[in-house]
Amino acid sequence: MDDSREGERLEKKVNAEGFVDKYLKKHLDNICDGNVLEAGCGPGMFLEVLGNNYTNHKITGIDISRQRIEQANTKLSTLNNADAIQADIYKLPFPDNYFDFIYKR
Image (cartoon, rainbow, N blue to C red; front, top):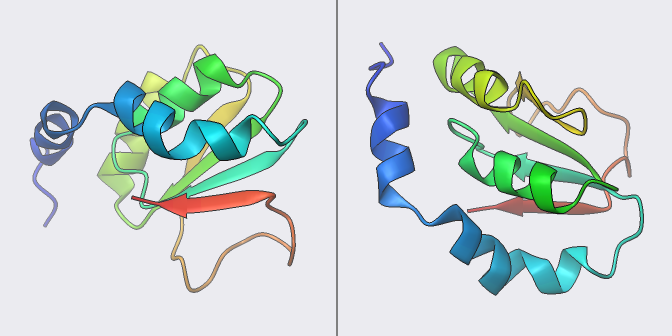
């Protein structure tokens, strides 16, 4: 069973802005109007940063946990370019070559 406090623990553990600046910015700045996938998005901290900073991209997160997806979509409710869905990385509900950039932390 998924502990409802896990999302809060994950948020306190990471610096989403720093991660995006250090590891993702150099790649995303070179993509125009791209589709981006975060595998294992947890409660959506990185999706929120990406959605706010890359408004020309469509940001999608997947996670196996229903509770993490609910937390992520609550966090993303004001963004029109980011969302999270419950999915398995080995059974993605997207066509081949749909994403321009995929990352997993």
